[in-house]
Image 1 (tube, rainbow, N blue to C red):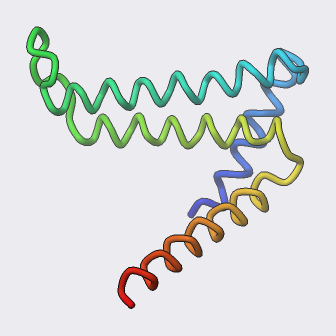
Image 2: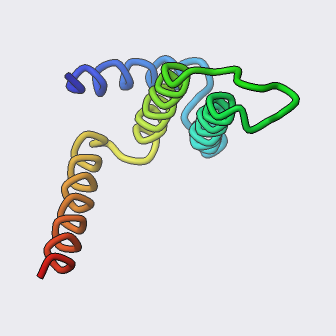
Length: 110
């Protein structure tokens, strides 16, 4: 299912490169976009919990999920600016994280 992620984000990155260039400033902007989207996800979660008494409950869990998808997309687009092989880099990181979790889980259960 995520195989399309890399095709689509490569296309988005290419479009951004054509419009904005691919220099250091643009790389920084793409990185900051990840932070912006993460902030929107956090704000949506605050809205789910009603943590802000002035606003009350303003969001749903589906809104948080939607914002988290935006974080993933922004991160995938940004990753294209930092490596020529984003799927390989993410796959290696994913398996390394899973390996650490599995090692930690086995250590605790022994």
